[in-house]
Image 1 (cartoon, chains in turn blue, red, green, purple):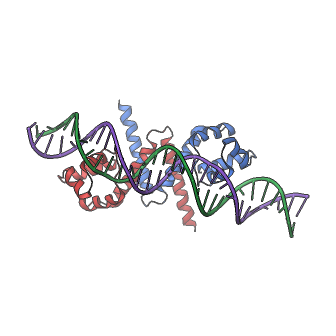
Image 2 (cartoon, protein in one colour):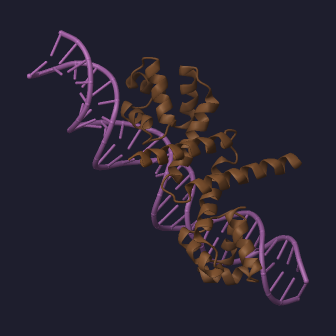
Length: 101
Length: 101
DNA sequence: TTTAGACTTGACTTATTTAGGTCAAATCTA
DNA sequence: TAGATTTGACCTAAATAAGTCAAGTCTAAA
């Protein structure tokens, strides 16, 4: 599930048109269309608005937002999967380091 | 293990000084110092040179390079870990999609 | 079968960020 | 006190973010 897919899903399942949602977010509908197909990214502040409109947890939108960004970086990389593992490892190392103090 | 750590490790275990390695890479030693502490990143082409100098697999350096970059993105994020999972999921979804065709 | 409304796409823009450094001064280490 | 390393301030070019807008396409229904 990408952020674009999720937004489209939320919008459609609430019977809203792109134009409506776009206007709530104060962006053009062309731009929203691209957001839903992950050709463009929403500003992070917009995520909060989306969260409120559809009453959907911000943290999940946030995870999708960052995750989709990470995916854009690794998707054409041979070492993409390993790179994700490296990042994960560094992250959990940092976590245990901080826990130690 | 970060890329900076790995480079430092390779350099030190071959008894080389920063100045020497820096000159082989045609960068300043101040810059290399920052690379080793992950404050700056090497150009990707430099990775190939490093790989040759220390006879260390390029693919691993590459994974560390991308991984450290990903880590920089997620390290201060609450949803960092989940975001990595999202990216991983998207990546494996894409893989199976491609395999289907 | 045409036409309206929803959506997609391509070309373009401008402002901000990031990449990839340099250099000199400060610090650390034997 | 020399040589190795680190740090901070600074720089420029290139990339990315965050859009707009008009033209094109797709789909139901009159």
